[in-house]
Image (cartoon, one colour):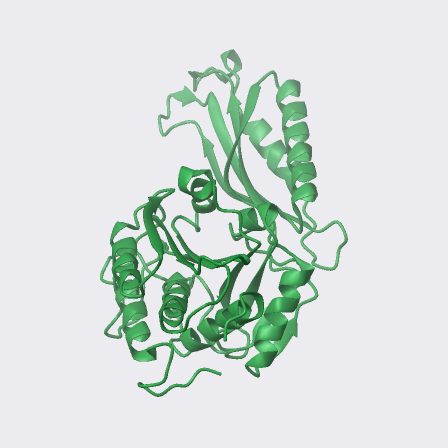
Length: 389
């Protein structure tokens, strides 16, 4: 168990709290995390990594602690990006970037990984290596893909990958585990419809996509089975419809229907995508209109490996933390799922308080008392796999 005195502790909770609040004060949304990455990079340099690489897949960071001895390679991931949400909190470390806030807790996740860096700098490992990965652009589903495609990642083949996410609505410090899928597979589809404009007084001379839009929405929503107990669970959510322009003398000739699709696993999501494409093509053909498809903000389901789950559970038990095993996955997407499609791993939850505002709420603030708990849980994983002593 970690000691909490200033002289004996492996981590400095006060310093980590200040770091978390500094990141919170200056939030940056997906793809713009330059200052956040700089703050984290400067902190990591004080923790004596064997190697540190910046600008990986954008503003991503890879920091490595390598013993030089044979052993497993363990990767831990945290996120850097914030959300385009106006914060309503009035405390001293509230967002100073208008319209942006860390209302998902990525500031806290980054601070936890920085705390793990502190621990690694103070206690020698005897085998293998640890890689801390700080990822940009999680919220739009682009960050994991960009980092994994980066040349600096091609030589990294971790034996295990781990990540956590704070969870409002669960008791503080509780570890939340799910066998199999931890989070849903999510994809957003844009259905482009191309007809023909005409004078608004003579719509019969054009092909207005308004009726195809209405039919696509109606048919797509018939596929929705938003019941977690349904074996064919899926969610079809209309998020945006664009039709023509605000030019009142023109009958619209173009439209787009934006849907978000989600299922419990990746194969089922592919099936749902095909169903959506099939019905849209059928409707478009009936109305003699052209259709094509664009996909954006894709999130693979987080498929937890059974061995990795056991490692997390043992770490929690070693520190006396309560473990809650969920029956169903969370319906939201998280792009750590792309890592778990390539490597054995586990994403787990860390309870952030039953009365804490929900994620993505304008009054959310990551509870700083979770930093030490997160570091302990991650460090317990290292103790199991890399023969620390």
